[in-house]
Image 1 (tube, rainbow, N blue to C red):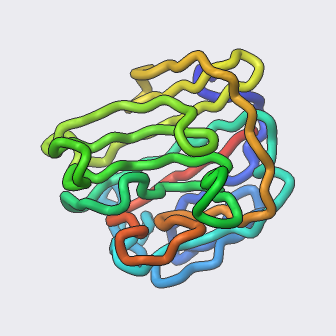
Image 2: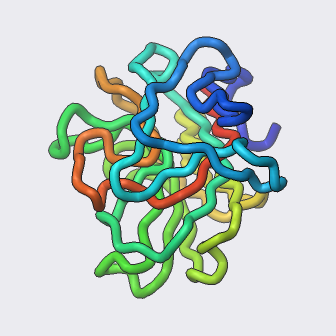
Amino acid sequence: NMYRIGDHLIAHYLFEDDQLVTDETGTHRLTNSGVSEITDRFGNQNSAAHFDGDSDYMKADNHADFNGDSLTISAWVKINKSFSGNGTNVIVHKPYTSHSGEYYQWGLYVEGDEYHTHDDKFTFGISEGLSNGAGITLEPDEVVGHWLHLTGVLDETAGEARFYLNGQLVARNETDITIDQFDTNVFFGKQGNLDRSIDHTPMDLDDVRIYN
């Protein structure tokens, strides 16, 4: 598989058949805070997760599986509207213990098109820490209301971050990947160390896979 680092699927979330919180591997069950079920990209009802962008989120408890030296995250994501957010809105991430210092352990992010520094475009990316990663900028008409398949790779051995959009490699950044390990949970749809409305992401999410 061109995406993955290692063959160890540590968590897999399908959000279907009234099983929003189920990890298909059986290990990392989610806690749900307000997220509802919605139609997936195939038109199947109750087969994806809907985040309102105001207060909804989900989380998985901290575990050694999430603290590897390298990481791959893939997800189907549909952003539901233009938004400003906080500049680094979470699809899936593992934060630092507070919104300071290191800020983040790793994550898959979206920057809203109405965020004040970003010139009416969306940016998607993977990062380790605050800014060490790779990503792509897209126009709103390419994003809003469209299912996108996002894959981010943090590859310590190769010394690079890679980002794929709909199966195509669109960004590669040669960089020193050193993933810190913090005693924090994994969050879906919100910053794990902030709790304002703007720290939540207005999206639908499906088929999230995390490998180490």
